[in-house]
Image (cartoon, rainbow, N blue to C red; front, side):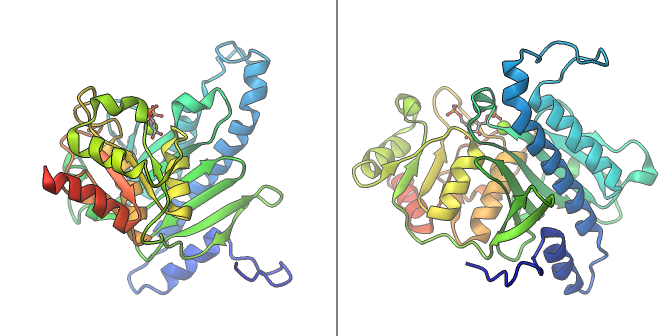
Length: 330
Ligand code: AHM
Ligand code: MG
């Protein structure tokens, strides 16, 4: 528990990021500004997610709103909100979104900055229409020095990330962030519209008691993943939301293991490297856990295309090492 005293001196996310930046010699404040743009996007999307049930119940989706414009689906809306906010920050040169087929170079050279953001604006699509937790995932890279920004900035391992995080729209709205010095959680206080530090220095227990995987796909798994799940189900509880943000959030807070392995149906896995696997693997490692494809560290992957996928297992260190041992035996 953190001591908030009489509640007049709260650690907001912006305050925390500023303090980190001020402590670093080469910091210019650009990352703080970029993260402010991400916070704004998350707050805006959080408020839209809250209204989504009403909009659906009233049958508005797909119809025109009062201005005669189509009511945007939530994932499209979230994508537009983040794209606009990130470009307006002036700190980003290149954007990669799950919703857009191509990477986007910021058109106006004067609006470009030194960062690249990869993001999934609204992950957990199967849970959107039934009000179950969904989230936004983001990874931040720096443009390589003195070079024109382009695809080569994306064909790099996840070890080049300078920050990553996600925002979960659940029973409460929480942003989890790492800027490379551990992981902290900030909960949105809707009354003041600020993310307040509620989970400082999140650390994964070395072992958990929960496994999280879509067991409906077991018949397609390769032998090591199948054997691991068969071994773990005898001793652990099963939890699976089907929203990566929610499943990873629970794993970060309670420990255990989450996996979406490559299988015979999705040969390269389902989750996308640049904006699902990398940010989550980064957070898990920063919290003292591990993330693997089974045979290699997930952060060491190098995508060839922006929407490339990979199998992944992540969570408590010893749990992930146990999974890896099944691949070593194979
Ligand atoms: P999405 O980007 O279409 O939402 O798909 C990604 C989601 C993840 O949030 C989640 O871990 C996974 O798909 C669940 O897949 P499945 O429904 O096959 O279990
Ligand atoms: Mg997704």
